[in-house]
Amino acid sequence: MATGHVCRTHDHNTMAVGYQGPAYTTLDIPASVETGQSTLEVIANRVPSQKYKIWIN
Image 1 (cartoon, rainbow, N blue to C red):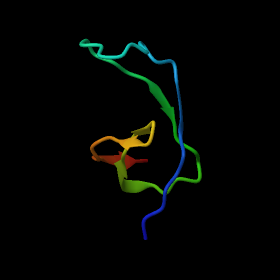
Image 2: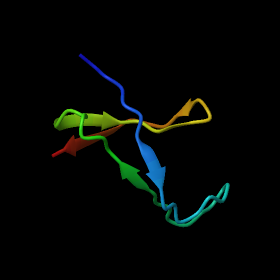
Image 3: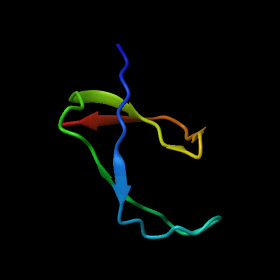
């Protein structure tokens, strides 16, 4: 069964719109998130990103 979790981001290297360089942020994953294979999808201003397959240890 799929579940959703809200994770907080912080320490962004830029907040610029249309920035062409590499961008990063830090993501805090709650301890309640299931371990193993998962999918990461970022939603900003109600617009979802592409989905990324990830592994949570």
